[in-house]
Amino acid sequence: MYNFTCMKFFIDTANLEEIREANELGILDGVTTNPSLMAKDNVTGEENIKQRYLDICEIVDGDVSAEVIATDLKGMIREGEALANLHPGVVVKIPMIKDGIKAIKYFTDNRIRTNCTLVFSPGQAILAAKAGATYVSPFLGRLDDISHDGLALIEELRTIYDNYHFETQILAASIRHPMHIVECAKIGADVATCPLKPIMQLLKHPLTDRGLAQFLEDYRKGSNP
Ligand code: E4P
Image (cartoon, helix red, strand yellow):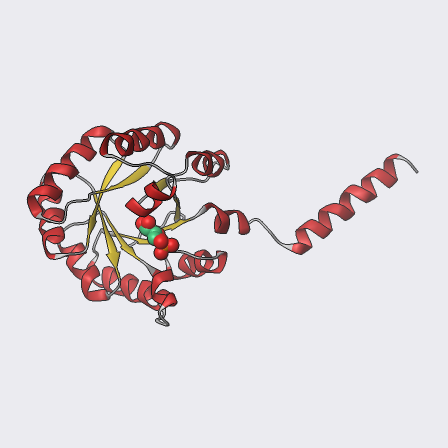
């Protein structure tokens, strides 16, 4: 069953400025990254990437997904253990492949938290939950991009996980716009991870701007009649 606390907000970036800005709002629960986001922020090489994870963990009091590069079981275990040892906030991000499922089971048995990434179907999500993943990351925007209904996948996962009381948390990923966030909250996703822009877009409503301008104008008129 999903937690009856508010949906958690993660930011999906490796950029420290964006992470600080979201964190200052006081609503940030964690961070997700991936190799593409690291490269986009010009963070390259194993040591620099590890340092970036440490920098992120210094800023955010929450879960920080750190992705393995290896695609074989031994390599994923080696990399995942090193990442988990960096900081207690690190969650090891493992791709949804055959050895990935084996690695998630290994980490579950060894009390290391995992985020199963690149999930696009209910069947994949069942395997991730059976292996004991802490989080499963369905990529809803990328499904929308190829004319599949990404939000329908989140709904299916909610039903399946609730049917069997799986504790794996649904981390809605690849979010493109604020309505994705609202719809994920309606469905009951445990977490939404999104770039800074859609988080900030949630703030905006033209009637708020117009109403505030009117309040301030009336206050000024009242103060200087
Ligand atoms: C999730 O963990 C991924 O980093 C991310 O949400 C992918 O989003 P994209 O499809 O916008 O690249």
